[in-house]
Image 1 (tube, rainbow, N blue to C red):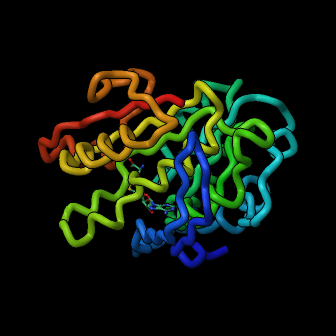
Image 2: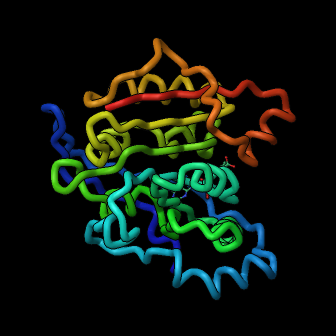
Length: 245
Ligand SMILES: C[S@@+](CC[C@H](N)C(=O)[O-])C[C@H]1O[C@@H](n2cnc3c(N)ncnc32)[C@H](O)[C@@H]1O
């Protein structure tokens, strides 16, 4: 399945008195070239049916997807998925759904899921904005999700591209609607400007509360991601944000 239109029309949302009626569009990614290796291509061909959830515009029933009632974490833009697989492996009593548009990365994670026999990971190959809106139940309806993980989102550092950043309102309002009470959004980035921007957008989202005064200390349970390694090799500082509903 392709990544979908990438453009998104928000319908009206109500949350804690906040009403959004404006139409908003985000195209937060560019389709990366990086061809899938033979192993990744093989994984895409043979394992997608087992672990990928096709895009659909009706909310998922998580207990049917995972065959259990364990809490669900959504990872937006998992890249090559190495952190996803490690976190899922360390937390077998939790379920994980990774959303990504990068085919080679999806192939890589499929291969890793099979290699480690992980039965708590699924993948949605689609634009995360649309997938989250359409495929995740609102917390008010049937439960909602425990967490959103966003590791090194595309930074869009040029001012004219800032609007393509994912972690901004009203997207953060939509995330908060999908979160259970007590659920969290955890973002990590090496782009200082994006971190400051996301801090103010998340702080302005009515249903969310910053766990720390500003940035969070490094969360030790999080494995290093591919982009983090790149950032560190350039000497970039890593900043973390942790907000709860
Ligand atoms: C900078 S990379 C980081 C990858 C990984 N999290 C890491 O830390 O190594 C950002 C990833 O987010 C994905 N992405 C960005 N916007 C997306 C969207 N709207 N839907 C799905 N994936 C998206 C991109 O394809 C890319 O793989």
